[in-house]
Length: 96
Image (cartoon, rainbow, N blue to C red; front, side, top):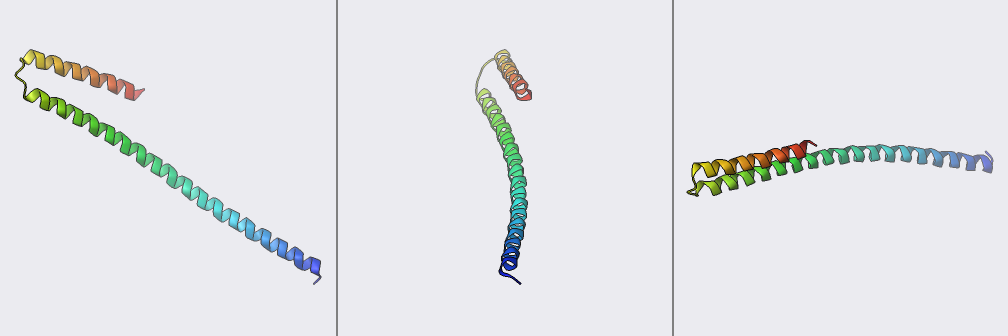
């Protein structure tokens, strides 16, 4: 084999190795992208759950604050109605 043929074979071998490496890296990149999307969904789910729990905690705190008061039933109903209206507004904003 001539020197030029050997060099050409080396170039072809190296080119094939680079193509194989490129394919492997692309597959790895695709896997990382899938994992990234999965983690984004998990984060969004966790954030929504956290917000729900914070809202429940806020409602519980309000309920506890109403427990110890000696206000009339009418005043308590008014406060509850205000809270319900506020919750409804929040739900409308969340649905947008």
